Length: 431
Image (cartoon, rainbow, N blue to C red; front, side, top):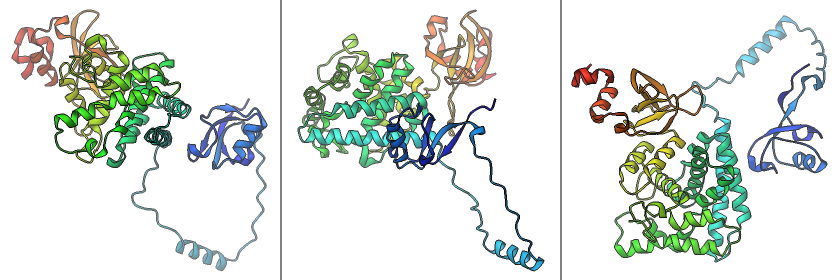
């Protein structure tokens, strides 16, 4: 039996019963939210045939192909005619470029299409809010579902594309980026899929209250006065008030809109909540909001490198939930070098610097948690695939008896063997 294959055909050639895997061209040219369905009725068939897509990717059984038409023999040509044809062919050859541009990967094209759609919805939401109109939550729900599906398909592509924003487009694209980061964060935390929609909506709407703040104040390059900062702080309450007039805004979204600037030490706003008074959703929102703000270009500052942003965030004692911040690092695959982590392989490892050409994150595994003993250090790639190891959480050095962790960490990062610390101390660092 011949196995079905995927084949791209013109929209006019699709038929009832065919299974559609995808579409060529922009996602906005086809009338369906998702690919991966069977053409079961005339309505779907009509929509595809009349859409603007350039091709439809369907499941195709090779046996169903039409037999190739027989080639007609060419009339014989004289040697002079053949030589003339060869000369014309050589003269019309177009030279290939020395450095052809690489085609953009399909997953990046798809991510850009989703992000573009999400941005248009954010613009619509903000425009309606400026006019005092209620937010159309059906639009928000549909685009958040699309973002969630795209994150599940290819989280790395979505996170990468969501970071791309012009300085002048920050207001809208920041909301889209935080939506993407929130959904990806929920996926990493293994939260139930039913939470993706309200958390994505929270990210998309978290800054809607800034519509009530003057743009010149939001983009002010210098330090804010106390009075100006008091105006900025009002955006959380105003955002909650704007959304309270809209139907079907989930409680999780209202929570994040109102509380994403609270701090664990009680020094945040608008209410000065602390510790467990701040929900998991609001803690997640704070991390995603700050990370994207730090790494984005603004009219008055350059965006930070992702690692620089994460190192700064990890250094702010009492501001963010440290355990949750590490899980956010997991969600984007970037870790602070020197961090002691528990690995999926039941070993302890130290996150290694990624160097100038940062690729996949790596760790140096050196301790077996099962036997509670040192092992020969080995470098491992970090990732969700089973081919790689995966940091599960940050580890406490004292829990494993590492009383002089700074010395041991220096030894491990320098390529020394921590097993020799007990015998040689500084020798392990120098070995």
